[in-house]
Image (cartoon, rainbow, N blue to C red; front, top):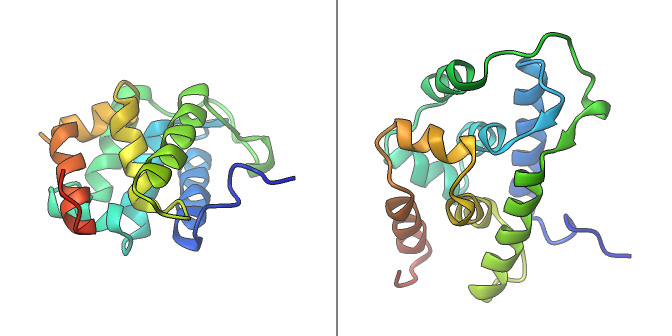
Length: 150
């Protein structure tokens, strides 16, 4: 049976792994949209990382913002105990839909970022907004980078 991550390209899968690392680092037992933002920036090479970097989002500052918003967890968590938050599950559904709408047969970092923008209400969105980055501008920049009209 096909799973939700089967369409994810290697970079998108790496972002999820890095997001999990960020959650572990903060002693959180879930991957929230904020961890996904950190993973997208940290990945460094995909369309999402290029767009976020070009808009002034830096990993160290983003980590500081995440910690100031939600703090650190109380106890260490092993990666096997970490689950996706409901909002992150929704974001992934939206990312798959974004890939489909763009006629792509895969889900890449750009689709994860578009899903984050479309979801629009999580801590991940607040992190981007703390950099003065509007969600609409992120969407425009992703589509420009992909060579599609916004």
